[in-house]
Length: 442
Image (cartoon, helix red, strand yellow):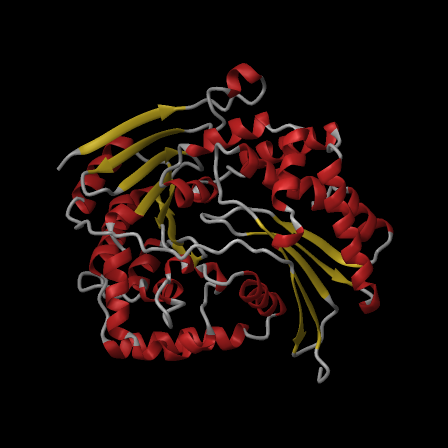
């Protein structure tokens, strides 16, 4: 066994440009990397006597490339609590420690976490490493959980946000797996009880040491944790092979669709553009995230106009957060008067044109960049928050080091960069407009 260890202490020198070059991340951390490809980041942060243990699988619905098999990444969010031969009752063990634990799945990741007293570090590591390596369930248990997932699908089917999200994805994407939501296509969820053998292969393929990163944040001894990692994770056999994600063809014409929601709702208008993949060092990608905030965020002129002054919409939201692969830059709004939808869309399009032609106000840009930076720092109050704030960097790069690169790049973003991002990404040919209206029977 070979351990590769890097200990770094990066000062949060945000008060002056000279100190900011040392990095924004304020906590001491150590990287422990095992020969089988497994990585763990040990971070001193949070309240005394507590740790957050976060296991990040760099697999989400994006990786579900086989026809008819969408939803299995989310399915394993359920199955991973089924236990092993060593720990057949996962819930009882975690309850005995007084642990707060849960999991969530997204397009690019599946995340499991426990927050527990520091004294349970070894027991948590034993428990977590065991279920990642030795998960075991019989076909009847699998079918039971598949039924629970179907119930979850049916329960959420009438959620307006999920209904609209499904329609936007299937309209905007032709080939990429971002076309389906995390829970999967309905037909695939209904067929899931017959997929026992496939489920076993899914776990064997994706739950491998090279594809999992653990973050342990809190109050604990680095050397002890390092030793435990070698003891509990070194025996995990490597073998991860990344799936071939189908590339999305370039969109060559705008797309429009109106969908009838089978319930009561005011019209919800979404305007979406094809954006770039996430990057910590690509100025155009970081500028695109800034663009969303200055053009459509809560401090934007359009927000003040439509939400506060004219009260024509219930909300105006921007979704310019980037994903592992090129995804959507979205603007959504709930319009109060149904016949006002075209005019509201024109206000959005006018804002797009303005940011393509003019430079963003210097003070708004400075305030937005400051808000992004200090919002990150202010969100580091607890061990769990520290670990969660680093998930996006692990998802996109396999480590946490890019957090400093991202905020260094953010510091360099100029008004010209924001305008260039608007010209590059907010193109009419790459636009998808989906409007959800109340169905006639509601």
